[in-house]
Amino acid sequence: MTKWIKITFMLFIVLTTTNFSVIKSDTTTVKMEQPKPIKIETIGKGKPILYLPGFTTPGAIWKETIANTNLNRKSHLISYAGFNGNKPIKMPWYVSIKKSIVKYIDDNNLDEMIIVGHSMGGNLAVDLASELPNKVSKIIIVDALPCMREVMMPNVPAKSLFYESPYNKQMLEMNDQKFKDMAVMMASNMTLNKEKINVITNWIIKADRKTWVFGYTDLLKLDLRNVLHTIKCPTLIIGASFPDVKLIKKNYDSQYSNLTNKKIVIAPNSKHFIMFDQPEWFYKTLNNYLVDEKK
Image (cartoon, rainbow, N blue to C red; front, side, top):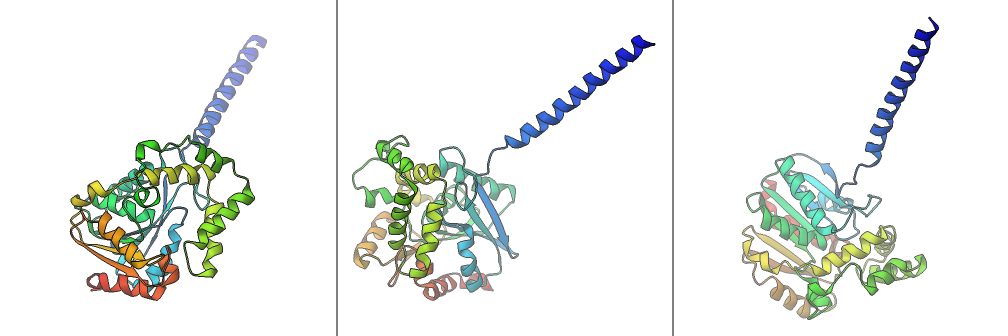
């Protein structure tokens, strides 16, 4: 009898240990789940309109635009990994963001889309309209050039830019106060609205530093001028007037020369965040361009 008690006891230990291992394994699997490249918030009902923010900017920036355009559409507000509390992802960053948006569009069978993109979001709008021409009906690009490197770093080839560079190392190692000082300066150059400078600054300093540094490298390497000829949908391009209207218009005309079905307008008295500097003008411009969508 004692022998059977011992065998039963040993079997109990084996079963208990085995069950514990399964639970532990399941728990480990959950912990190892990879962060998502994008986060989506939806508002309203109807045909889809995608709102793509700029670098470090949350998708929620578009809520005032949505409230002031009143389109009969379902708004999809996209936010990016590494910014605004969203967990960072592995590099390459921009490509992963784009692929994830394409998958989201396919998984949800989104069709007849309007895409509104500011800054980097404008680059994504171009990429999506080129890759999914039968799903996109219109795009609106807000202060974005298909190759910002050409303006910021003339004659510097993309192949010369790397994640592991002395400049990037300096940015990654910069102390918090110096990084904040730099962020304040950058924010001041992006809007004329003094009340919004702190908002933009906080987006920058709260960003995952590696995402901020390496993601910006991705954007500097980007050149979408060679895909513009593939875009057939109507496109509205809105540029900011700062620092010089004539120079800005020249850059837009030059960089978007291969895009045929386009309209370029320049917002008066505005820096990069046009929706902050000229909100009423911005809403009216969007409303006029999308007037048919309200019917």
